[in-house]
Length: 103
Image 1 (tube, rainbow, N blue to C red):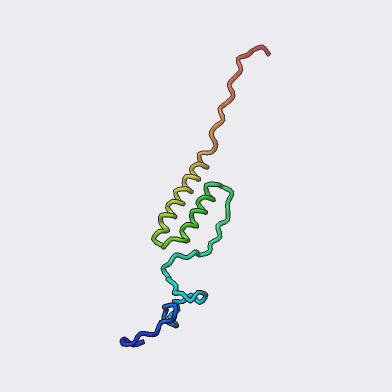
Image 2: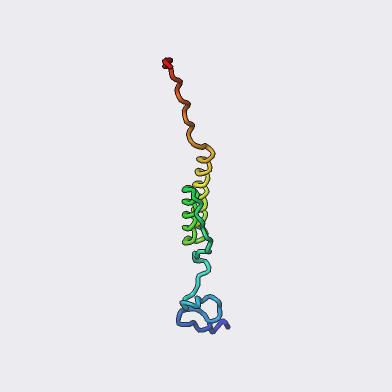
């Protein structure tokens, strides 16, 4: 390629042979565009953890600078879920003693 004469563009608007074409669509690929990376999210059976996994899917559609918000949100949710597990179930009050001595 010379300074005075650029390479001809294809019908899709890309320069042939520059590696920035989507062969299936003939459209230019934007390497900075969001794209799913194909990580499988397997449900755990815990509603709080599963909600976090579903929220992670939102990052697939955001540019990289938007991922931090999703990750922080998921981290907050997981922390709340773990805190709830650490707290355990509410204690069951002890039965009141009977004052009926007619036995």
